[in-house]
Image (cartoon, rainbow, N blue to C red):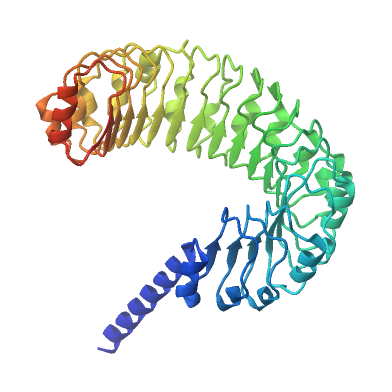
Length: 470
């Protein structure tokens, strides 16, 4: 009996804790709703509400931990804000009327704040007392490109606890060497700038785990980041990089690598020595062939090779047993029937994207990928769907738009989990009665087909709970 009571007590405790955590995860989206349950408000999002002032009653939200005031018209904050002793995350971005001097003096009275987002695109002044906010562990700063960047980074460099710094979209043309003072930093986001090089002293940031350099003007893999041995996530997408050199192999702990939207033609096989890699994006480059050894990426879960110039794929791809997402759109030179026939495997694959490949015959082997949930075969030259597709009992979404399909593919009726089907831009003119069996279907799109209106009305009657896009 005592044991049973203990189990009941523990179950009740876990239930109450789970409910509390669920409430913490949910956002309140207005002051009106927040003031109705002040004790239950942990996260409050007041973005885009064009507020000129924030009421003093905000102090009622004693448990508030996150407050987003972005995209408003605030000039000051009420002094009662200092009573929010649990507030740890505050966003004040895009409030261009803010009185910087007053705001930062107020922030000094709120030592619980650890994460701060601040600034606007035309801000040219370095906020006073920025360096005094010693409790900050995360800072996102938005400003004009003409701001004194070395002085700004010098101020930020005095924040000894800072671990996460985001300076994205500020159109900076360079980063100063003094950024190396942030020795505790493990995440740096300078995406959306105009950086052509990085400061050489960046190699001092040994704790770096997340480096985002997306959408800059880098022409090579920056050599100074090779010292970041603990790097786990590296984003170099949308730059001007032409090759992946052998030094890529130094990032032995890398889990996510984005090299998309560059001009890469050559890849060192050292890339395939990164055995911790889980996500690799090489899309939208000029890659004609992959070097040997890709099967060594045993833990790879997501691979994107879309929009390159590949004419063949290594059959060893099928040996990567953990692969869940495979995207090979717009590589029309590949014979996919031959590839999938000679490369068995892909048993754990959940997402397969083969759009825009001039495919006229679907590889039969796809029907054996029993865990597939999303299939994209749009923008090809497909006329029929293999009958074996009925074996794909886990597929929830299938895109067959922009093909040459003349008859409704009856095989999809037997795909018992299918919830979303896109048949836009085909030549379908008739809907079979058996479609009534697809009671699980949530959405079907038949736009730009020569289908009579009476067939559409029939479809709506047969599947009254399905959204029909026509």
